[in-house]
Amino acid sequence: MTLPKQIKANRENTKQSTGPTTELGKEIASRNSTTFGLYSNKLIINSNYHTENKVDYDLLIEDLRSELNPQSFFQEYLIKKIANCLWRTQRAAFAETAHINKQLNNLDEKIERELLIHKFKMRNNENAQPLDFSSPDTKEFSNLVGVNSIPDKNFATKILYYEMRLDRQLARTYDLLQKIQLKEKLEQKEKDKKNKK
Image (cartoon, rainbow, N blue to C red; front, side):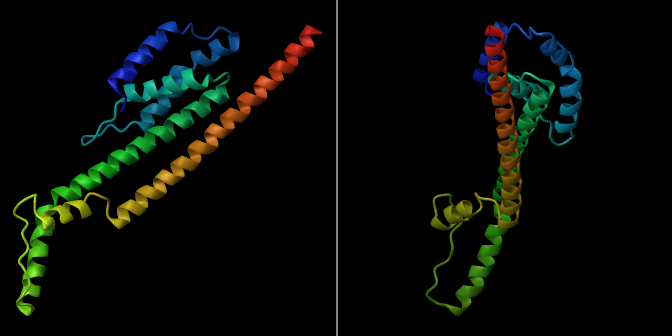
């Protein structure tokens, strides 16, 4: 999520903005509320169990706009795709954290299972030492917490696949935006040269 320091910096940067100056820029800006508002409402989770902050999403788009300086409607679309990739990546991190929290919150069941397994093994081995999960300082407890501080294999595979897909999409979209902007800069330079002659 956006830090208070970032929000303050965004507000200060916004004060310096004069907005679009060309007719094309003004036309694009006039459609922002429709284009981005409708799409962001579909992307932002708003349920009884979890709600994402639409203001943070809007600030992300504004940050990307000021950093990447889109000059056309298509470039605005690419900015939105980049924002969506970043937003979903953030959501993946949230999901991973929630999954780990769930695993850690279910430690009592795992401790009971480990104790039962160990008691069964102790019947066959007189020299076996009893497990001690009574304190967070014990080796057994620390090991169990450590093992459950990363997602289980199925969830880790799912989240990794999701993040890799988002990273590829982000890289392709950013690369396309950079190519378009470079092409337009070169075309503008050519026009400027012709106008000087």
